[in-house]
Amino acid sequence: SRTVQVIREIGQNALCKTTVLRQKSCLPQKKNKQNQMLTDCSSLSSVDWGERLTTKYEFLDVMQRKAASILQMNLGRVGGLMEAKKIAGMAEAHYLQIAPHLYNGPVGAAASVQLATASPNFLIQESMLDWSGFYADILEEPIRWERGFIVPPTTPGLGVALNMDVVRAHSPYRGERLHLLMDPKPYDVAADDAAWRQRWNHDKAL
Image (cartoon, rainbow, N blue to C red):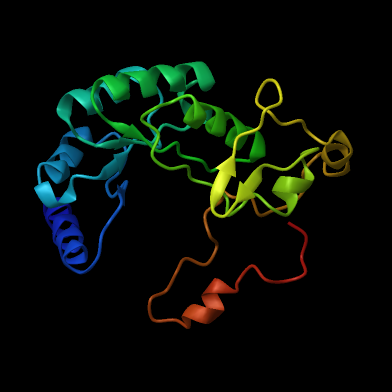
């Protein structure tokens, strides 16, 4: 398709100028056949896929098609830590790496860290910056970072515990700006980029 052709051209041009670690989810999810067309292009071998897939059977289809080289299962979508570990093991048997997708809070992040620690084919972990601010406040002990690396916890379970005083102070949530809401003012390429990037910097409560 024309979309696949354009993505290939963009990726090839980028690779001529720099080293690309991974090309992340360029096509709508569940378009495994179309994504296979991207990976067939040798210069785009490190293609991520899977952040919106929900079952190990969908991931198996990706693996059998060789439609990705890096799988991005999201623990909140695929059924939790056990199912994600099964997918990671299947990926290892197909010589594929994993880069757990993350769009949610620190509990999901802690589960992803456990998956990464227990998976020899782990490549890289997505995050909400360094999980500081409210992501840290809502935990009794924040997720640790050192020089760009996540430090896995040594405490039992997921290694984190909620600070229930903070949870109660913010329950129920009455804000209007959740991470997954559509932006009320979509990006305008002709507009002032600096103004768009500062659109959330105001005194209104989250």
